[in-house]
Image (cartoon, rainbow, N blue to C red; front, side, top):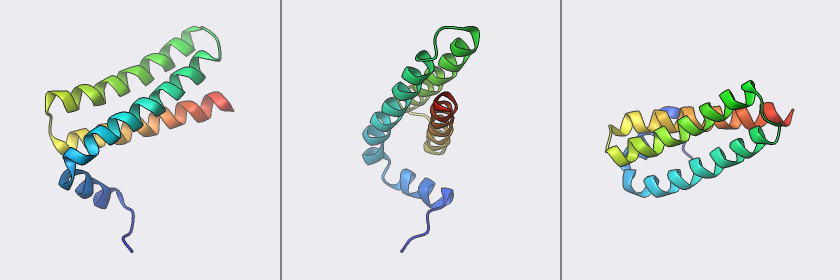
Amino acid sequence: MKALSLKSLQHEFEYDYYMYVPLTIILNSCIGSIAAMSVLGQGTSLLSGIELTICVSLCMGYNAALLAGSNRKFAFWLLVVSLVANILLILITLL
């Protein structure tokens, strides 16, 4: 059984890049929209606006990096940052 580490996940992402592109776009968009919905569920304030800006910027940044054909390593790390930040936003707003 393979150990799950960031290095092995990065290698897998780079090896099967064209398979992971549509899957990660869907995953990142779904997690990002859940985060945006939970942020907007708090109401509208300056803090909610900042959280929403972070959420949308990270999701759009990952999609733009893929469309621009950027480095695979950069795209992987942008995906990781986007997923972690959006999951943290979901957890923070639910608590």
